[in-house]
Structure formats: structure tokens, C-alpha cells
Picture (cartoon, rainbow, N blue to C red):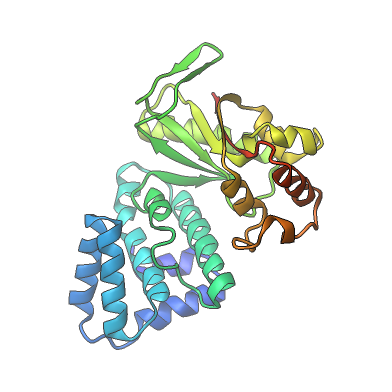
Length: 287
């Protein structure tokens, strides 16, 4: 796997591709040394990596956001060897890279007007896929975790704290369809058994979409409700900021009184938030 091939076969949008090649083809003051330092910094942790990105971006007179994007793509090139070792298909590799890069770079463009990855904003999330733990399988993302923070039981299957499980992530902008989600779970069961040797597949999802308040305001036919119903809830907690972030992604600093009221979900959130009712996240388990 090399840089040209990953760009060619991922099917990234034009603006992202142009940004990547602008960085790739520029005249660097000391490309080899800078690249080596950035890769080493990534392996030392997010703080060291962020500092190294800022230093090299200033030296090369490019934005930290664009440099982040470029280096993260090179890190995906590096993790490809793990896919080969586990005999994971190129189709899954490219689908995972495409979803992650398109989503995060798109958010950067929406907020800053450039394609990149915002400095120090998504570092933990990006590690999931770049370290070979998260995979895009159909409609959902699945992350293998070896350190469950939760415990619970469903249909006679017990999950203890510290057990291996599969964490389910709902991609931003994904329209939840029961049929597509169930197909994604089917793929995930086969995938983690074949490539990671897991016989007991336990799915955990920790999301605002599983919180009971949504059952009060959404119809039973809603994709969110259909998704949530598949899980046995094992923990519920309040987190107003988390719910607000997902329902109003463009209004992070807007007060409750001034939030848009364009959809029934937004109106229901506003009413319950102003009334001080419980809004938050829940953790669910399914097999």
C-alpha cells in the first residue's frame, strides 16, 4: 500500500484529494526528517503528536489542519500491514479509511472552510481506526475493545468488566435503517470471528440514541427507536451537553433559549432541557 494507491482507491471527494496532493507534492524544507519526527510523535501519544504537528506546520508554513490530514492518511498506509496479516479485505480497509477521512475532514471544512483535521480535536477518535481497532462494516462502525467498563447479561450471555466486546458506533449522518443495521451486525459477527477469533460476540453501544427520553418523543417507526430497541439498557446517565452536541451540531455555543426549533426532535429537546428534565446517554448490550 502506498500514498497514491490509497488516494486512488478510497474514492475521496475532490476537495480532500486536492488538499492531500497539495501537501504531498510541495517542496519541503526537510521532508524525510519532518515525516519521521511526526510518525515517532504519534507513537508517543496525542499530546506529543499535537505539539509536533504545530512545530512542523509552522516550519513548513502550512496549516496544522491540512498537515494533520496528510499525516493521518500516511498512518493509514502504515496500518495496512495489519489488515494483510489478518487477511482483512481491501474493501473493508478502503471503506474504513473513506468514512473516517470524509467525515472528519468534512467537519473541518464546515467549521473552518478548509479540508483538514482540526488540531487536537479528534485525536482519540482517529486512533481507533489508525491503530487497527475500528472497522466500517455496512451502516455501522465496530471497534474491538479488550477492557469493558460495563457489565451486564442478555439472553444468558454475561459480560464482565474487563471482558472483550465490540463497541458499536453510529456514523455521523447515517440514516438508520433496521434492515441495513441488522446486516451490519451480521457482517460484524462473521468479521470478528474470522479475523480476531472471537466466538462470543457481545455488542455494546453507549449513545444518546439509547436514552429513554427519546421513546417519549419519537414514533415507534423511527430509525432511532428501532435501533435502540435491539439493546438491553444496562446504564443510563445524564449528559445534556452530549445530547445537544448531536442534535445541534452547528450550535455548540448557542443558549438553550436560542437553539433552532426546525424539527420535532429539536423542539422536544428544547422543551425538556428548559424544564430541567433528564437528558443524556445510555449504554446497551446485545448479542
